[in-house]
Image (cartoon, rainbow, N blue to C red; front, top):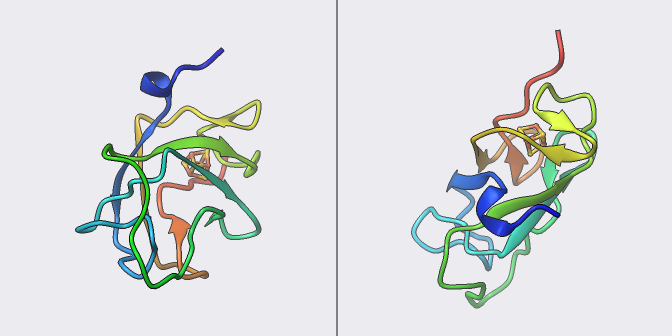
Amino acid sequence: MTTLSEMPQVRQCSVESCGYNHDVSCHAGAITVGGESAACGTFIDISFKGGLDMVGHVGACHRSECAYNTSLECTATEVRVGPGRDVADCLTYSPRS
Ligand code: SF4
């Protein structure tokens, strides 16, 4: 079983409209990435701030064609999230060569 400390940290998230974002930092316990553009499925545009008193991690990723993806888990050291094709995308996504 993967522990939280083994999951990649969300090093930076620039989507400040997200309820989990405090000062350009993700505070969700664990995000899920997926969709055609590696969208952050945990993003929520809401009028208040929530989350945990810790930096968020990548809990699961459905982008199996990303070079960092093994068995639907992210193996990157850390990821960055920000606007891409969607409001909040994993900017660390890298297609396998
Ligand atoms: S780096 Fe790749 S495997 Fe990791 S969360 Fe982003 S898209 Fe998923």
